Length: 56
Ligand SMILES: [Zn+2]
Image (cartoon, rainbow, N blue to C red):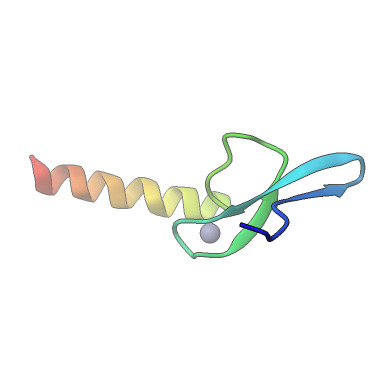
């Protein structure tokens, strides 16, 4: 990708990520950040619980 995926804000390096729940692009200084928001993390967590139930 030629698009910049890193930006600097307040002296912190932020990496560009795409939230798998709402497909929003967001920047995080955390390497392990996956979701743009706590709400999206909750949403994905509940979806996973649902899927696990179906699989079992
Ligand atoms: Zn999101």
